[in-house]
Amino acid sequence: MPQMPYVKPCDADAAVVGGGLVGIAAAIAIAKAGLKVIHLAPVGPVDRRTSALMMPSVDFLRSTSLIDDPSRLGHRLSEIRIIDATNRLLRSPETLFEAGESGLEAFGWNFANQRLLEQFQQRAAELPNLETRPLDVTEFAYGPDQPELTLADGSVLQVPLVVGADGKKSLIRAAAGFRARENGFTQAALVCDLELGRPLGGCSVEFHYPQGPFTLVPAGNNRANLVWIDDREVLRQAQAGGAEQLVPILLNKSQRLFGSITLATPAHVFPLSTISVDRAGSRGVVLVGEAAHAFPPIGAQGLNLGLRDVADLATALQAGSTSTPLWAEKVSFDYAQRRAADLARTGGMVDALFRSLLAEMVPAQALRSAGLWALKLLPSLRQRAFSLGMGQR
Image 1 (cartoon, rainbow, N blue to C red):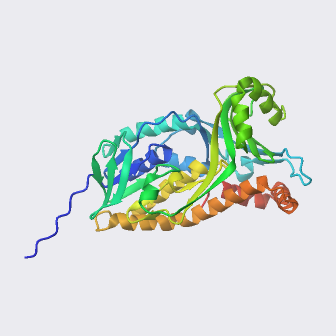
Image 2: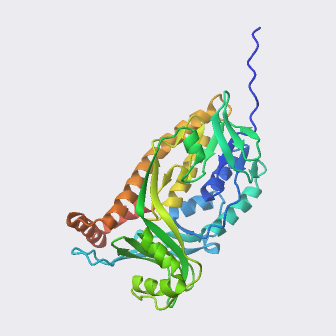
């Protein structure tokens, strides 16, 4: 009788690489599918950013018990106000979008990333089949039986399914052979929290300037989260001047619509780039979050898209059988197919929107202005824009 080849038993069913919000959400989703999961999540610096999650993302978090009542963690976004602050020949009309037009109480909720992370970590600790290790991955390779991960402590893990959630500079993406396209911008984003003289209520306000938007997002009471996109050097100079120089600039940029401004947190500047991949899964490896896609912070798509990655990964796991040979390869192929249309559609939308904000050519300005007039005047078109922007499928 021929002897069967020896196959080394795997250390777990899946390993998730990356300790951010999408990584931990993916680890929880896989564990809830009944698989044994090792989450490789090195401790990073405190994430002081915020994320505006649209209602489909909030509904997903609630349905998977990652959060319960969003009002305990975040702040309601019920209106979006767009103000053309350029001096261009063709200016767009001021436009107000209200959630009530779609029969919604809110477009979504604005959350502090750190509070969400702490909530997710509590949920992860409740799952006996989810082990978290605060270790970096130093090497990835396709082994003879299944993918292999070498960790910072020298140990090696063998698992059928690897989830790369390790960000823009993903080691998993590069080592697993995924082709990525990256495009950098001369613009950057300055983010910080502000205390305003007058509250925003539930209204997110976007001032559109020639080098990018200046956005104030409600963060409760008189607090607002600022995302200001401009030329990188302009932002670094504004940041270097400290509060004494920065506050007058912010007052001018906000057109003094909200009274006084004080800095509630230090300002940080982040470079902007886009990243896209030809496919999001292959050979037992899947990419989620910024390992698969990254955009400028336009239209609140980043974390929303990452959570849709997690939702489709959970669906791919449910659709297949993990007891059959090569199940992880089948899951990765299914996942890539499920994500392809959404990634292409959202990437194209965000890229077109960002470039339209920066366009100096009069025809492009005319198209953008006409588009906003149409959104302002045609309720049916606004409904379609709401659905696309909220990621409804």
